[in-house]
Length: 476
Image (cartoon, rainbow, N blue to C red; front, side):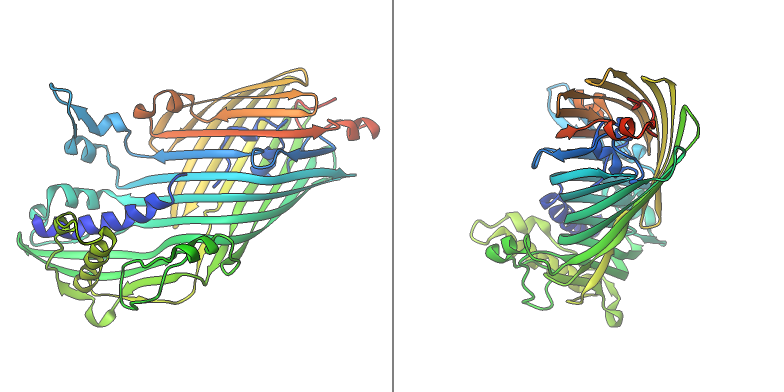
């Protein structure tokens, strides 16, 4: 049990140190797709035509979004209280809640600049945004091994890895175009130039363990983990640790060395007057990482070894040695035991594509019922979600929406949101899970989206041309 703990705990520390540094969190939510008076709904489907001649987002406040999801359990599921009011981790409840694959997802996005305008049948949009997303898939076997040790696996080979991780911080400059083909059809495209800041991306994370007895472990690895950290030094060349220069770290936020491209595609079809169908695919793209790069890979010559363990208690036993130095020493010991080596080769990471299928039925010009199916494609993992929505428009000044979403292992997700148009000033606020905000200890998913825009000429183009808006509920 001690050897297993010494192996798994450093791996968890490595993952969560890197994750925690950038997890303060990118993608749009789900219910904004139905609040069509908000121009940012085009980020779900670039074929959506905003009902304005021109809009401009309030700098740094036009689209501020925060999202967090932990698929298998919430805080109250695993943290219990004793009779004397002290808290403890219920490890059995934790294990019982886990699925074969479990997901920890955090996302943050902030739009610094955005605007859009109409040119006849075209609607052109621009945005400059800061985005950070953290997608982690962790298997149940890993947690079981950590909590219960290797005695249950004596005489068998198990995979103690199997993670999928992609944590990316980047800037996005995008230009989009929606085209109204006819009363029934519209299509859209958005091209994105990406500038990467930070990345942690796994290709392989296989760590196969064979335990002939409770006190020894034979380790065979097949690992490739890529990372790009601003200001990270390449010296010493064989170290798993980090040696980050503060000034270079700050400069990395404004460097253009890590660049990439992505695009969104979408279309809408109105088969009958009251029904609009939509299909879109977003975030198809990549970033090439060239600055601050480090790769942790299996050393094929020594990929099989006997694990001797790492005593993480030593990290906290000395006041004279810096924590960072003790961490680096622990990681280097781990590198030797797992048969790993460090390289500095450029690499490419991919965004997480998303597929949207939507339908909106307008029972009246002001009452709209919607259905949205979304599917995230993360490293071969498929994460589906289904959203039901009702939106009510109270004239041109106020829109209110409510919705319900079924996510991976999360079913109590009730959305609520509104948009207020006070002349040209538009304010919107929504959440895909109002209960998650009210009861953070009892939720697996929470989401908040806020923004301020200036909008001009709502539906004037349609009035001038004697046409009706192709968007449900937005007829002048």
